[in-house]
Image (cartoon, rainbow, N blue to C red; front, side):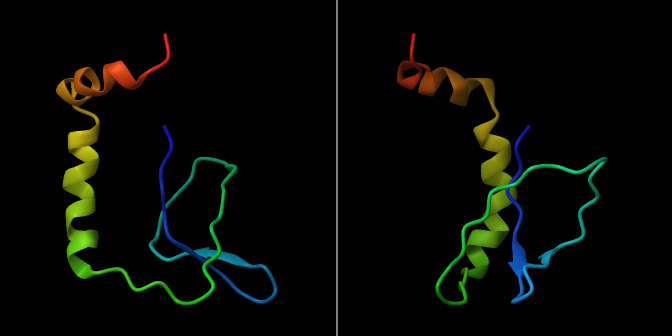
Length: 70
């Protein structure tokens, strides 16, 4: 399962997760580097968990089935 987490990268290329998160072993990751500090509205952060749960419902899978290649 993929997970999106916020990180910071400093001038020495040290990466740090902004929230504590334990990984069982080293994992690969992709990073999007923004040209300026990203300001995320608080409401977006509050709704992230609920939207994630909805995304994984079988009803949602059925609604998106027509978008999947055959």
